[in-house]
Length: 352
Image 1 (cartoon, one colour):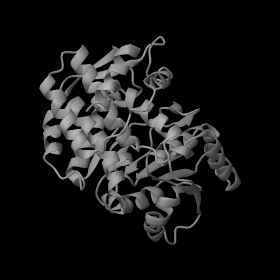
Image 2 (spheres, helix red, strand yellow; image 1 turned 90 degrees about the horizontal axis):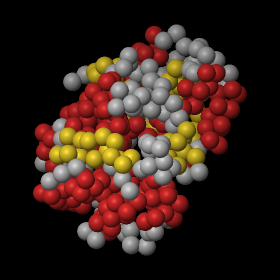
Image 3 (cartoon, one colour; image 1 turned 135 degrees about the vertical axis):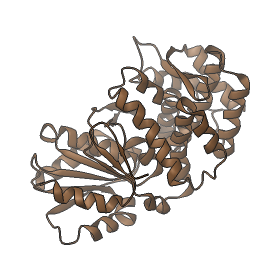
Image 4 (cartoon, helix red, strand yellow; image 1 turned 90 degrees about the vertical axis):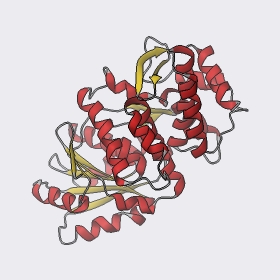
């Protein structure tokens, strides 16, 4: 277990920071830049700077942590920093951080001077198993997640397992939701392995398999014309819940917490619409509710969530589109769901 080859670029799992140093040395870049937030600046940047000692000719670009920073204003700040630091087309941007850094750093790099090279050094479990792999870049606009973005592949991904030791338990669980999703849509054996593991400390082997599943999907369908839509399971409803929480909650849900809610709701929709077995629905509910605290949807206007869903980039002809399950380990794409069905699934979660 060393390297996964993705769509023209490697994903390193062993000696990843040393591999990053070698990559930069061999890349013949005029300059390189490290994009961080205040969390990775404190916990992870010193590791990179230690390894980059003596290499010189790089600058640090910092942004605020959190989904609230993933918008055009912060992206303009990154572009302005690149201009001020003299970044040319032979420059490299190293995205050191979680999903926000991966998404926005990739977007900023893919559009600066019509595109400069970038690599990801994901420091959260969520970014290691999801955001850093697959070439999706993006920023939010008016609270709509990832509505502005590109499909642009990084030049490499460097997964450093030790960085997970810097994370609070809540952030580990946020990434775990995407791992559970990978099992539910593609690999029942992997789902069973996750169920029987201590997911407060996921092993590198479990992380590797999760990346492997996502990579297998995006290699076949890099621009989400077909099977890549499988990765949207739990995300139509989950993104709406996440967006609403960012707007209304003093302590908003993490991405993974919102996706966990979305997976329960969309598993219920699967039970209602695709013949998904009731005992498998109950199994999913038991596993997810055993990991994530119950979120109170009681005061939430479900029609507000549906309005958010109507702006989702995955929709077709103004209709809300979901990926659902046919059984654990298999999914069914392109299921149009009515507002009544979506509200019924939210009510189902609220009554658990």
